[in-house]
Image 1 (cartoon, helix red, strand yellow):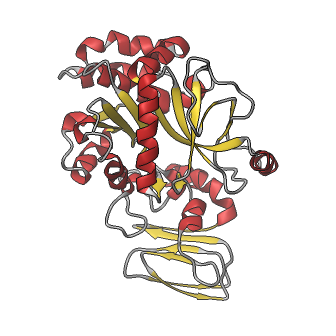
Image 2 (cartoon, rainbow, N blue to C red):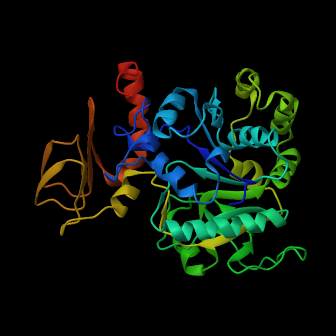
Image 3 (cartoon, one colour):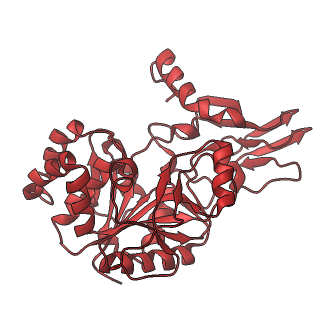
Length: 366
């Protein structure tokens, strides 16, 4: 195992699109959706253990979840949990982790991944990641993983790869191409065009790069963020690190690494892969991945009886029974003190429902 390999897992989100199952005090990355006995975060850490020394795994999260992470991953040390004092999207999150790693080594090869993705073929995933790490170790590139689309999905970003010559100093490798464009969540018509063209991949949001390349990219395209962490280099890895981050983090812009870096850089490459990936971002994505009965109904954790009902997803507290009659394409989800009944096609409005509940009931149901 390469001791220069590092993994940054982003685990600070609240997963509001999975409300009421995902709540502020225990977001979706800490939940076991499929009854495996392991949460999404635990599965993510397990996935990287054969590739990255556990001491080189960093989890960036909200300070509210620090103790929960240490409870779920007991062989991680407290200093491996990097706490964001404010939510500032993925670019500041990654910049903080990069700065922390810089305090330990100048030769790191870094994977950045979300804590809530589902990977069905883990050995193939590990093979792909190992190949990608070898590639970024030797080349000044920013690499992302692209998934071959299987349907015109409107909930994912897309990466175009057609007709872009690779840089002459970058060795050719099978399934690795230079990126032409990024497109965020197209409408259904455009997504269909993308899939039919054969030039587009789904953007997995999994990134690989070496330390030198990503630091250079931040200095070039996000100098304000880079300057903040350059000023704090002396305290990274010391007892004063958290106090410095607490002081400066809220001053950083809220910007994604996709928009802030990847869409601007000219050394961005994508590695096409297929290992049963889903970002598990919505009830709809969970429904599509779950085992269904003859009428297309899904029941998770609880029991259910369906009468003249089709294409529903139901999850209640274990030991409870749902009796569903006459519904087609609904989400029926109960957790703690909230019951949600919503058409699957309207699931994008769940975030607004969470906001409305927070305002009307003073956060009681969040």
